[in-house]
Image (cartoon, one colour):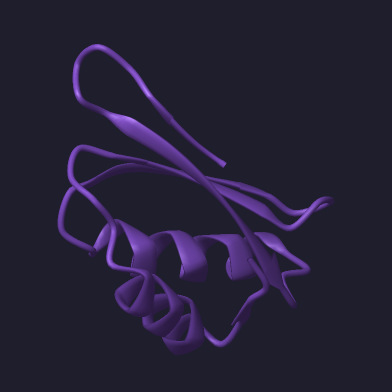
Length: 76
């Protein structure tokens, strides 16, 4: 799900499999935070949902690669 706000920031929700602890959340957050345009990353461990706020379009391949680099799997 992607929503836009008036200040050109967009929020994208992702499902990530395999995260079980704060270290997992930090690893995923660190990798996604390094992508161009990413402003914030929020991770919900119980649901596996990752919410990314960004000011330019995210490249789906870069997102999948970043999550893979962290050691986890992008579900959707």
